[in-house]
Image (cartoon, rainbow, N blue to C red):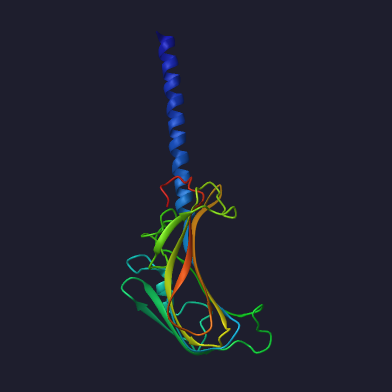
Amino acid sequence: MDKIIRISLCLFIIILIAFTSVIVYRLATETAYLNSLSSTYSYKFTITTDSKLSNVTFFIPVPANPKGYSPIVAAYSARNIAGIPDDWTVTLYDTGKATMIRVVTPAINPPAAGTSAANPFTLTLSSDMKSGTIVNTREPINNSAMFYPIRNLQPVTCSPAVPAGKGTPQCYHYITSLYAEYQAAPDASVNVTSTIVGKNSWKIFESGSNEYVTATSLQMTGLRHGWETMTGTLTTGIGNYDTPLPST
């Protein structure tokens, strides 16, 4: 009987030690995860042109959630967007369906020397900022910053270039809208692109992260006066989702 008691006691101690070790390990990893967790957005907007544009007005989609909130909106309000030319008047504009930036400038005038169709003039606006909450990288539509209004969202096969990591990326195509008004030569080529990356990163013994990426683009020729359709791509669920706490 004493032997049975001793064996039972030893087994209980072993189980207790194992259970305590698991709890301590979990607490340690959760603490490391929370202390190192950083959620960020990276935004870039680019206009390229091979010709002068005059009397320019753009209404540019700004990535925001359906309620209109986004760090990028706040950055535009505070003019904390790098690359805005001094002669641009930039105003936030709410259409009721989307948040946009109204850009007005007398002209976008590329340098006469060196500008061509093969070597267009480029203006880039960009900002990197922290998010006040964990970014939902698995389901950013309706939860994170996107280029609204989103129409004709369609799932597509991800390209081999998409980095899977330990996640399961999902890829989509969609369309959205941009307003462009300017005078230009009939053969003037103008390309507009916008990109937003929402990312969570942390370090538990080694670095980990997950993210989503959405981008819109539009190629135009000659003068413009009205709403244009931009094509969009969205890739969600990129990276590592094996974290000690529920993570988006």
